Length: 97
Image (cartoon, rainbow, N blue to C red; front, side, top):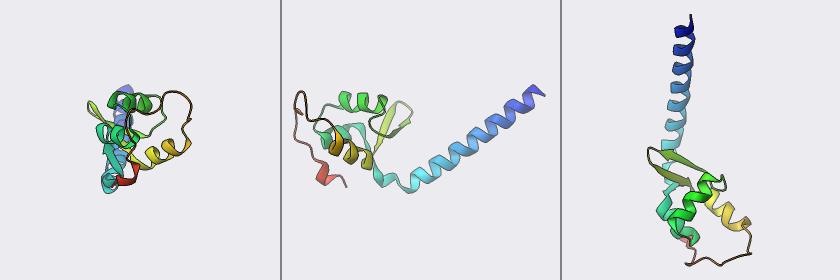
């Protein structure tokens, strides 16, 4: 009985993952790598990774790497605090696509 429940749970999880990856692949042009996201924000790639882990940017972890949802970059850039140290590079959000 316990094995049947575990199998049903795994089957449900894999089907929801398949639906998520299917919908994501349709919108793959709305995602960029963390390196490109960092260039767009004018920060280092490690800072982009920290923003993802903190939940300030939306993204998906694929294996070892992340891909970042472009509208979340635009939202973060528009709403981020202007206090503190300025960006080390010039943000390039205009050429996101």
